[in-house]
Image (tube, rainbow, N blue to C red):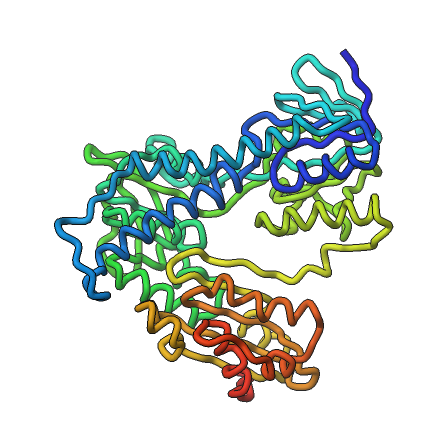
Length: 461
C-alpha cells in the first residue's frame, strides 16, 4: 500500500519528534518511522540511563566517605545492582513512554514501526508500506563502533548498549577506550565495587583535551583505585576461563590485562548502512556520515539529515539544535545555521568537566595573541565545603578583542558553571562584562570573575 505525506521523519531520537511536532503544527501530513525504541540513544542507552547510574554510584561513593563529614554509617556499604538497574530502567522507560505518547498523539501524524529504506529520493519502504513525500528528514542516530581487534570474534564484548542490561558488579571490568564514555563507565563501576582497568591507545586520557586536563582527570581516577594503561599500541582480545584477556603491548607494565568483562568504548558509527541512501543519491563520507550543508540539507533537494548521523555533532544538544535550525529555515524564515553553534560538552565523571570553545592547544596553533587565567578548585569555598575540591578552572581570551575563546572547568558543578562563560560567548560580549559581574556566594560560578581578573599572557610556545 502506498501512502502520500507532506513529510517523512525517519527516526525518533532527539531531533525527529520535535521536528514532527513543528511540521504537524504547520498543517503538514507527517509520517514518523521508528524501528526500535522511541527517544534514541539519549533516552535508551546514553544520557538519561547512564546519568541515572552515575547518580547511584555517587551515592555509594559518598556513603563510604560519610566519616569525613562526621556522619556514622554502621556496616559495609552494599550496592544492590538489580535495584540500581531497576531505578535506571524506570527513569529511562518513563522518558521513552513520554516520547512515544507525544508522537502518537500528534495531529496529522502517522507512526510506523519498522526499518525504513529508500526506494528513491521521495519514497520510503517500511515493512509492507510504501511512503512518499517531497520532504524527508533522516534522524537515525548512531551506535557503538566495534573495531576488528585481533581475537574480537571469539571474545564476549560489551558496549554502552550492552552495559544497560548489566545487573551485577563485574569482578574486573576492563574498559578499552580512555575517552568520555569509557571514563564515565570506569568510575561508575569502580564506585559500584568492581576492579577497573582503562586501556587507552594514546599516551594520555581524553587526548582531545589539553594535557593539564588529561593529567588531572587521570589523577582523580587513579585516586579512586582505577588502573590506567596508556600507549596500548597493539590491543588484542581473547576469551579466558575466567573472563577475558586484553593484550596491550604497553611501554610499561604487564603485556596483558586479565579481566572478567570487557567494555569497548572506542567511538561511534552512524546508522546509515541499511537505509538505501544510494538509491536516493544521498552522499555520505568515508565513515558513513551523511554530508550536509550549514542548514542540515543533503545533496539531494528535499532530504535533510539531523542528529548524530550527519557527523556535525555527537550530542543530544547538537541534535536538538539541528531540529531548531531546520525548523527555523523551513518554517520561520529564520536563516539559522550549524556554523553559528559553539562547541560545548561535558565529561560526566565526578567531578565533571565542562568545556566550551577552543582548547589552549588550539588557540596556540592559531598564533593569535591571547590571555589565560586559571583557578584551583581547592580555593573555591563551595567545593571545599562539599569536600570535593579536585580540579581547576581555565579560560582563554583574545588579547585584542577581549572575546572569550574557550574554557574548561574540571570540578564541582563544572558542567553547570561552564554555561556562565558559554552565554557570554554567544552574546559576543567581551570578557570584562563577566569579570565585573557580581555572583552569589558561596558558589562555583562566583570565582569565574576572580579568575578573569588574574589573566596573564599566554605563552605562544
